[in-house]
Image 1 (cartoon, one colour):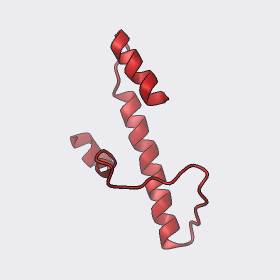
Image 2 (cartoon, helix red, strand yellow):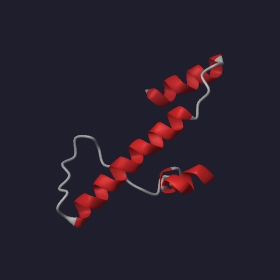
Image 3 (tube, helix red, strand yellow):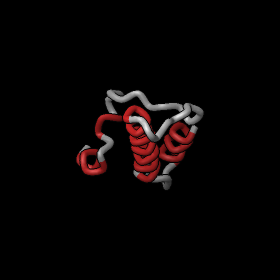
Image 4 (cartoon, one colour):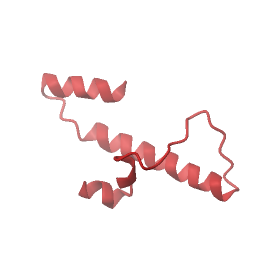
Length: 70
């Protein structure tokens, strides 16, 4: 949890933020669009942090990695 605070993604874990879909049109010139783009980028960071935190040396960890990847 402390790493999520440092990287700014702590609100993603409890589901407080609605994440835009990849095919949503984001207008970066509006305040709403800037916020959506920031949320989208933080979501990618959260996904990366989650993937990198999995140790794939065990069978159960490989299964967890596959579930997150899917």
